[in-house]
Length: 269
Image 1 (cartoon, one colour):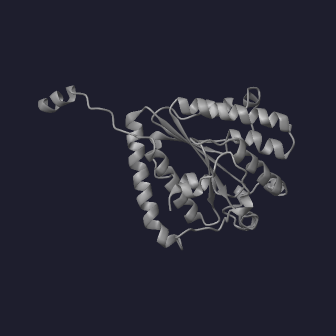
Image 2: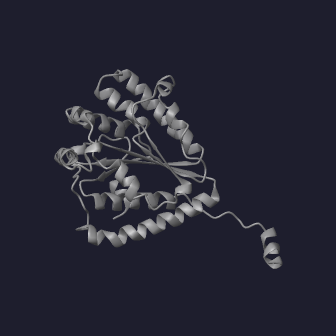
Image 3: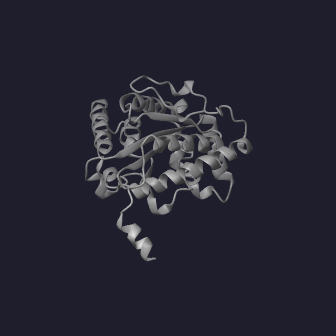
């Protein structure tokens, strides 16, 4: 199943509830998926090597999702095989005092991956049109302005050679509840529990609507959104790897031309 299966048609209204978070496509279980995951991981590593050597383009994975959707996990597992020298991860939580004193895109722009690098945003600048709207910290008119700023920002990055891959990890409300309970009952995971997660859970429907608006307002042919069913972690990892590999393959990556002087050095050796 190609990564385009998860791609949303840009500019059109999407109903998240119409997408099954339990989907596993033609795969039936983790054991069946493992060979595909291994193959895709190896391919992604090879493509990263060319990207790093070429140093003309970069890749930015924007990972969004509800609490417990597995944003950290997908970076650790699906993208965990990437060489750390060419891979950077940035997590976006509540703005610091310094960040809040700047425009909402400032903190994101300064950590956009440089040429040759792959970056992953765990949450992102999209939080400034998600949680801010759900809690009425900004008006709808301000949100519309921010949508335009985000679209221009992404166009700027694209024109600078940044490939943007935006992924929403889609889980069910029941799945989230099970994960929250597990965090409370498992002593090794209790540290992950945040009381605020329960507060945000009460706004589940509002978040779904906010995400649907983001998918419609902030999508393009070059930077579409992908919705990945994530109730099954192994399928989530396979899907993200498939999307990632196809994204890098679309970039026409190539190793730089060899310096002729190196042939002379080879003769000397």
